[in-house]
Image 1 (cartoon, rainbow, N blue to C red):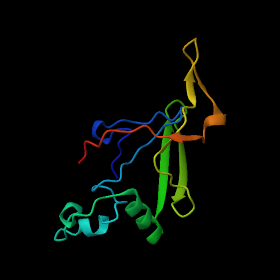
Image 2: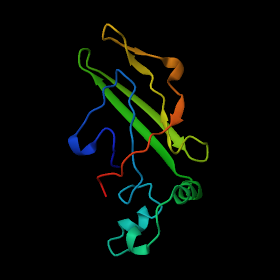
Image 3: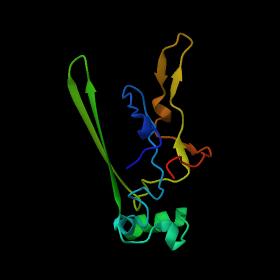
Image 4: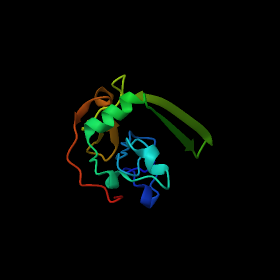
Length: 138
């Protein structure tokens, strides 16, 4: 599954000491695309050949119809103690875990002395997402 942020093409890593925003765009490369299974068939038509535009409604219908679950696994390694940490979370569209056109509110701020502070009151807050340019993966 390709990521837009952090950028897969530049092998970026997450810094797990601060909250991170991970973005996956549902495009013709995505396993969440409504026609992903047909596109995996080498002899099958592509989405562009079928002439069906990819819309938010088609994605939502696909997630609901197939009861798709998105499982996120994050593993971190702390170099000083050599401790390994793992986190797992499951998201279901039917449980309203998947939200479109939103982003998390900023919750990490830099103080005057240069140190960072995390406002945990804003940790789960959603705000309208700013418009993004189309992916370079097309």
